[in-house]
Length: 79
Image (tube, rainbow, N blue to C red; front, side, top):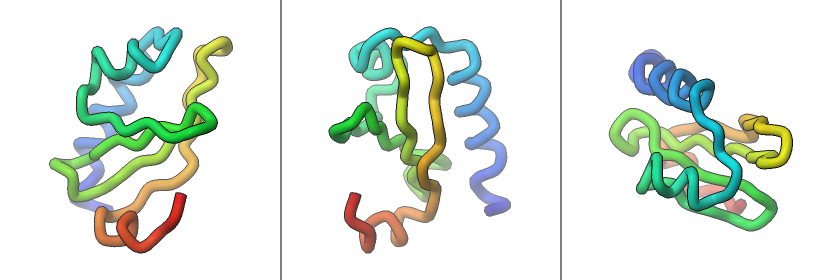
């Protein structure tokens, strides 16, 4: 995970400052975000080398990490 560390740190900083109230707020901040059902969102980390799946609780202003892995691992999983 050494290659994902600085990009993941940048993502964490961005999320800590964010005040996402709806999916469009995420889309406005991070255009590459992919949205799934259940308020789940995928983010590309480290130039799309890694994928990060989170659940966003908009009403509470919380983001919970559900899964993180390489893009190759992501293509093998079903979400």
